[in-house]
Image (cartoon, rainbow, N blue to C red):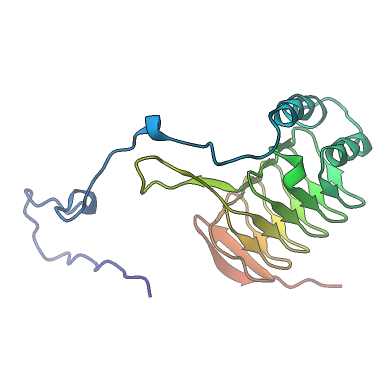
Length: 212
């Protein structure tokens, strides 16, 4: 069970010399981040030529407001190794890190300015909606190490999931069947099936009931 801090007594006076900031506690051992020691040599998303080529193709065909037909966008993604189902809708200014690490089901809607930062695998089920500005972030950093090591974990969105506008799904999160992440919310842990989640970090607020 997570430990909670005691609530302060409003009737108890506090000395101005007393610093209650936990970050300055004498028991805390503070180090320093050193970016000169950052090492990403272990991470290999694919051949360098492929990464560079995709960077250029992505900018022209997907991460743009040019009126590129959806069928052509899907064809380009498949050409670069993405597994894309049928009936997928792709709005303008979609940014995808590595399509060969992306699996998308049938009848998926991907909104304007969606950012799929798939340093690791991203799996999207059927009938999923990613609203405008949504972000799927598979990468993170280990802030407890001076080397600020990169970490990656996959994201899974099961069938019927809705990620609201400007909402963020963090690395390693699974959104179970028909879960909803509300506008501008941040998912840091599993979202249970048919749950509606809101806030930062997102918490369960109510059940999703779908009428026929």
